[in-house]
Image (cartoon, rainbow, N blue to C red; front, side, top):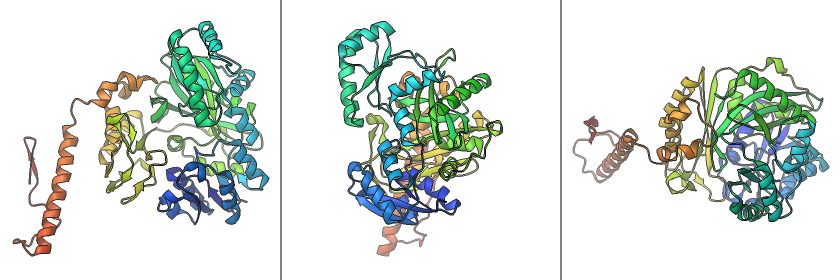
Length: 504
């Protein structure tokens, strides 16, 4: 039985895994870099271990340091979270060699599905539809030009070991092929240590739909329905929802069966995701498989009432699935927004810094998966995501209304965030009507970057600034003994809004 788990990750996912561990009576061990000494996952864990400098390659990506930390703290298992080493077959294999349970699929499965070309071949054999494209790695730019002509433009050039939009290029005409081929290979080599690329026909007006799957070590595999992930910027997801407003019940059944077939084809064990592209005519094609927990997994948990981390741990304990496919039914609607420390007006550049003030929303149907607190300094070394804001309601309209409310309540000062940008997404007609695909951000770029009016937000910000100035003035007067009216330091003298004018 697993009694202690080392979480080989940081940030919100580390905290999220630890919460499930605590509910299950399992001890948790945090690993941290020099930059994360004061991080919440370190403070929350039962035990913690320093594993190196701030740079990921010398800490969170150092397999041997993490293995040694697990042995030092006598951890029975390692949970990789997502990102970092979560899909690294060599890491999973080292865990097995040290008799440490890796909470995830077998290394052979990760290798089979981590290579996108290999995955395409397996899916074809399993009867899962794939996008037309190459079955072998491209050997030269000249071959890429020839294949593009055969498939027909537009085409998508992809890194075989890629993910997160890296090593990916959309090509519309022959003149773009050579530059795209060279830049994609270079980016893939620097990001994944492999420059293998391949070509697929670009599916126009596609929806990015993923199915959560769950398998055990006894041959059982189920799917836990879909997530709509089409609100993307440069192939990076921003907003996700479940159920998808585009998927019909019949299509859900068909795609779910294909997702299970895909997982069974590689003897999948644990939680994973089968990603599909669905065109405007609702034809669907296998895109890739993620052999780990996804960032957006909470919306599946909200609509199904299933704790996916607990399920991962039970499977790692060699327990058979206790959920049957016929018991799976979506209830209500959930939406997730990724809250990031970034400057949306400066090309979404990361905006690290110290959080001066933090007010997280709450209320019925609200969940915040985060790792920050007031006074915490977001490091420059890692992903700028602060956390995830998730809402649930009985239907999609109510979920959107709830998300608008909680985004209004969410306050972070001291650095720039994308909260205002997310508010504008919730007000965009295409999103509200559920009539959007992966081109949503591009089609609505002007409205999202330059809103017609945000006077309410501006007035609220002015009010907050004015209140703080009043507080400072009162504080100084009380310290110097100049206050004549003996008013409390934190009281407002007067606050009113008349004809849009703030009065103090």
